[in-house]
Image (cartoon, rainbow, N blue to C red; front, side, top):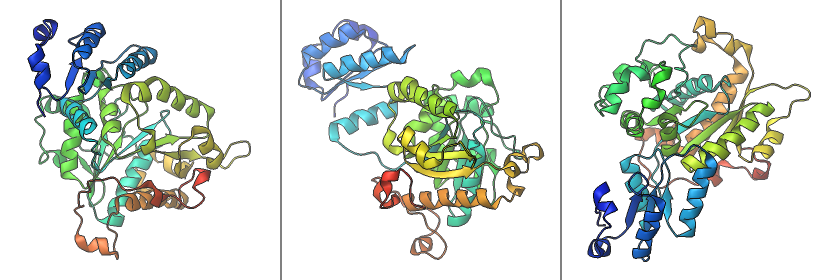
Amino acid sequence: MKCHVLGEAAAAAEPPDDLLASADAVAASERLMGFEAVLALRDRCKEKPFFFLAGNKPSSQELNRLRGLCAAHDIHCILPYRTVEQICEEIARCMSSATMPQSKVIAMIGALPRLGLTTSLLHTAVRLSERTGIRVGVLGLNGWNPGDSSITYEGKYLDELWGALQGRQLTEEELPGKMQPLGAKAMYLAGDRDLKKLYYYSAEGAAWLIERAQRCFDLVLIDAGSYPDHALAAQSLLVSDLVLVHLNQSLQAREQWRRMREQILDPVLGFEASKALVVWNRMRPQAGLENEKRLAQQVGIPTLGRLPETEEIFGKETERGLFRTAAPGYLAEIDKLCRAIVRYYELPEPGSSLAEEGSALAVRRTKPSWWKLFNPSRQSGVLSK
């Protein structure tokens, strides 16, 4: 596929017809051309695939209006927060109808802070590594909270790696040495402590960190926090195979998730709802509070699991003793999450035929079907245990 890159001056001077004729596709950036100029360029190459690189907007309505204009003129709109490599991959997929390979990345996002997301993420990473023997890396990409309050953390923090990420200097050999071990085969990089630095992380820097982690670990789990309109969270959601959405029984959580979908996830990131599953966290069996089946019907996303409210877990925060806590009911639900992940990725477990293949995971080129995770009563919106 031929690619011609035009600078701002060349774009303003209008590309010559012979250049357009020799190209397999045309891509225009909002940074270089206004939309009227884009439409004029589109008229000159109506038979070719046309792509428009949109910038972020102050409001979701403005971005939706732009996407509508693109659709009307048969222009594929590429949304913000993509790296150059991701833009090229999206164009290539559109022209070849190829599917994305598995990334072996799972992102977790909360509708609100303090839903227990980081606690469940760390427990899931440790339990997965124990069950399967694979190497699990956990990245704290929550820009508002480093996620270290419940453990004794001695590794580096995300903000300490900022320069190495922006310059793409961090290597996969260096990354594990900057992380905190969580058991034998799980490691954790705590998130950002510098609130002023959040919006200085670039999409390229965030993608670079995730790619280094993919090379170091068999599976990567990411804490994407509870506010996704920045490069760290955006990259987490864009590259993940699964997005585990953490909600609780409160109306506030469901309303905030709806706003997040309407204003950020759908219009800005092009969120794929098909890869989302709900984890109901800090659940209380209390009269007047709805259970997960009723709640799943309201949010329209299948339920992966429910984690109970337990003072034994959350009361250990001041002691930084998260993994010294033995809450059988909570850990049993964590095991259910792990079983679903093991089955989705076909991970090896002791005693299975897959375990004989070793801890390194074979790279699958196509995503496995969701059907194998659902029981016959999938209409209820709850995954099989």
